[in-house]
Length: 499
Image (cartoon, rainbow, N blue to C red; front, side, top):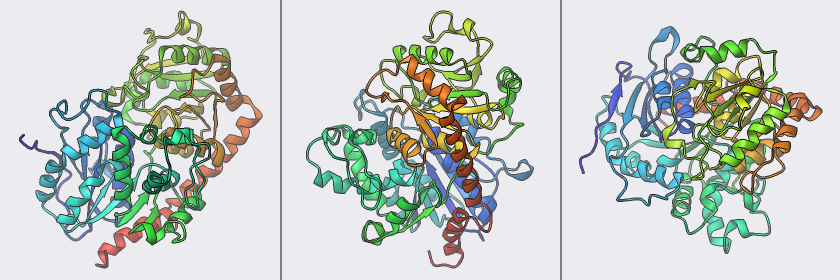
């Protein structure tokens, strides 16, 4: 099969006097956003040169908008974006029922020849290759081409520790993880309850589990692990990852560096406000901190029964809301992952909503179809709560805007994130009924939303989110922030010739 060619969005030439990094993003906005934000920070804060390789989804307007929006001061492009087309046909290589994780690993495996060709065609040889968790098989290309290799863990430190420790658990635990009676121990870190494990660990006979274990081994081989968190947010876990008694150089070859939060900036005059003029016009009329924003990420979907109960719960809560609604499905909890569309504000569709819902809530609610500009919505003064899937990007955007969360995990590592956010960091509320075990009823939705928006518990969550917001801001402050210094150390090694 002919190797497809990459497409370059040019920002001009690469300065040969600056350390040059190539950042590789797998498909999906959850992976692309932190890659883009890391690229911006390397250029603007650390005077590095950056090229970003984006493995495109088959259909994602959101990804297209993100990759064309990487402008710096004065509107100039900060870096070149190289779009790697997805494989033409995976049907012969993959079961149609394969999980999202398996599909992503296979896509990233199949595009490696294109990645290698694109690297060789760059006018300035990169000093380092930074990949997300689905791109670790490209470490071999970095070694071949004499490049330093880094992993960007786009989730939190607890997730990273579990991934690195998973090959050990694979050898120690008999039977399925979800059937274990005791929590799974991670050295020096919070243990993981069996029903909190990441999706690939749910079924050890599934192909995605084998891919996950392989990735855990490859994490260890990185010359450095960059994590989208910061020192004050997860100090115990970060310490364990660096401690030879638990992990350290006994397990991990490179440095473990907290460089987050990597989140999209809130841009009040962003073009998406024009696209969603009706939405922001409605939002401008609402009282401060009065609106719940409801969104399940770039690909999350609910069953029709759950969508109905959520709708009733929002209505019964009598709280103002914006809800990004997708067509309900019985197929999977991430069926929209490869088909995310453009933001479209509409008031007259049903999308599996209860009869009369739109009419009854027309004065307090605004329903948006499929996708909305989340960073800008969360940054609006009228928004006072986020009900979401618990994806790490959403969590960081919520903290950045000082907005308390209600977490409703659907897939990937979101069960793990929900526990971290609700129990460890106490920045979120969660339902008593685990969404993966059964339908969360309307009364439970109503109670959770009311409590976070108007209750005493919600006020406590709000105060803790404000503290985390400030600590995240301090972490990335130029010159003094812990995350700034960590990333400057990475770039500095290349300037000094010690990488």
